[in-house]
Length: 130
Image 1 (cartoon, one colour):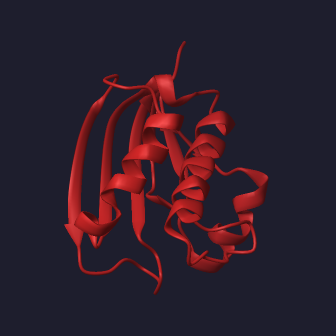
Image 2 (cartoon, one colour):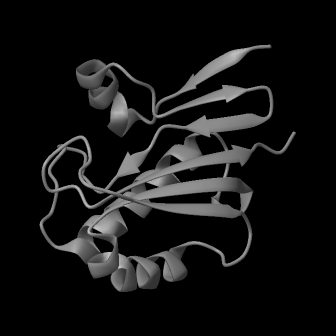
């Protein structure tokens, strides 16, 4: 078994600051850390829709670094602060970006995430084409 760190250039500061990897490739499996809606400078927008779009952008960036797309995701877990309030906008953005009915998905409501202001964190596992 060979593990390979997956770190997009724009996320190197997260590795240095927080000490975790955006993803690890093990054989043809990509296991991703939860991604959130912040920009490359680690700023978190207050607007939920903008934050959700950045979150999907960050997921796509990590997947692309490993040669994957959203189509390669086989499992997804989403963690939501104020889930009932924000779910309609989250689902709208998700449906624009992520292919429907292509993976397992679990939604979990939580009281808070790692930093104040974060509304969602998305963790995925993908298969890498050989």
